[in-house]
Length: 323
View (cartoon, rainbow, N blue to C red):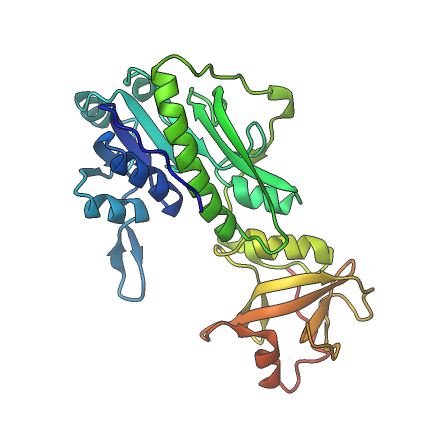
């Protein structure tokens, strides 16, 4: 189990983050008695059939600690910049805030702005580094703590930690691991940065790669791809947007799958029932076959592929559409 180092400090922090990834870092700042002056997060979103307001995960956590929460639509507004300046932060800590900080904000804190980025920078800069690492077939990913500049994840790096990508890892499982590791790195780095004992290292621009914004439609499967690429897609887009195909006008999510060492015997997208214990059915792809382990039909609960198969008499031989 990850052990956190406890230390006391009067450093005044403004924290910026939105999804679950930022929670561990925020909690460690609070629990180690850093003075969190305010938390900036995205505005509440509309969710559910009742169209109710859903607060971001970081906001929910902040409220449990009684922290002031700010939710501006944009940071670059004059009033918002003035508000941050009035908070007089010694440092701003960012963890998956998904907004670019304008120079006027970067210049406010005494010790600069520190970002916890879930990649081994300069690899996979941008907004979707963990899905990008899985899609690329990387053996490792990690966390980088960096000083922010005006670019997208281009600032000098203060610390890195490497994590292996396991065969069953998804974006969800990796983000959980990286969140904890990033929080520990932050606790190690902050006192050294403030004390002048940590020298930021410039990134190697020649090896920089970028990850773009993921759209909901990116999850739709093109069965002409190789089984290995589809398998990576299933893992990279779990939990969002999900990896799916279509059957009888309904979305069928592929929640878990595995590429098989078997040549395709059917046409692209065709379902084959192999009669083996570990895989209920496979789908022929452009290169190889994909063993399907867990699915979720639109409007239904998630279930093992074998259970789904028992309720579909005409499933074997069905040809699933490609993107």
